[in-house]
Amino acid sequence: MDIIRIEKTNNTPSVYIDEANMLCRIEGSSYPEDAHEVYQHVLDWLDRIQYNTDAQLVVEFDYDFLNSISHKKVWQILHSLKQFHNNGKAVKVVWYYEENDEDIMEAGEDLAELMNIPFELIEKN
Image (cartoon, one colour):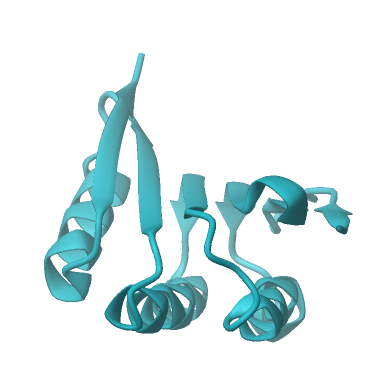
């Protein structure tokens, strides 16, 4: 079982995928020049494990900043998770936001409402 680590940069988040524990964590600021390059690792992994797991899949998002192109990639990830959910797989999304960061909080609230999958919003102090 693979572990994938992509270190964050000034404008890209870190990506950590632990297949043995069915955990994906994306953390940091996301305003890359090429969002496809950053997020395709996650989308490819989700495609690969789609029919190969019965374990609960947890995806955590912990953003400082999220631009519109990155938001679209997050939407694609969540859409994949919704397909998992609709196929009877256990999924959980955890969306972290800073105490006073209304933009990130509202983005999480909107996505939770639109996706209708298990979604937990957690305020960080």
